[in-house]
Length: 242
Image (cartoon, one colour):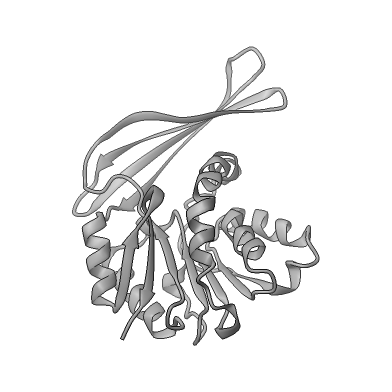
């Protein structure tokens, strides 16, 4: 079984994802309105703690949703969220797998794949695009976003956010270093500060990230039979043709 990349840092992922999802809300909702939920479930790839899954459920009331997430700690948050709402609970199915290890349903009414592209090597991405093209209803959207860096490069230590919860402040930041062909290593640092400002806890995790540029992604999608456009916040919306 693949190691859980979020085994140590999972408790912080939701804390530092909420602001990003607030920014993504407008372009993602606009794309989701093009989904065709009566033709198949909406697939959420790399669903994480479920912030995107909840947005799909809110935007498409009644739609069946399949949320695929390999990390046990992130799935725990997702499942807890589903239990909190009786209308969502019967229509969201959670799959404990990575998308590269699982076969999607035969027909799909739309696909969301946010903040996860770098976990897939180029050949895995191409295999995924082909599988989704075979399953997506014509005109249904594939929604994915590009994340930095777009090429193998060094990103110096950069703070992401300071978020206060009760008497603690949570800090997140990271840096990237080249790690071979089409890959960087992200080193993420999470700190918990007490009311006196001193660091009470610090967690440092490193994981590989496969970089992909806008041009590369659009070429991959075109080769798989998609027409794609890049919108706000580098959210890419692709629809199958042919």
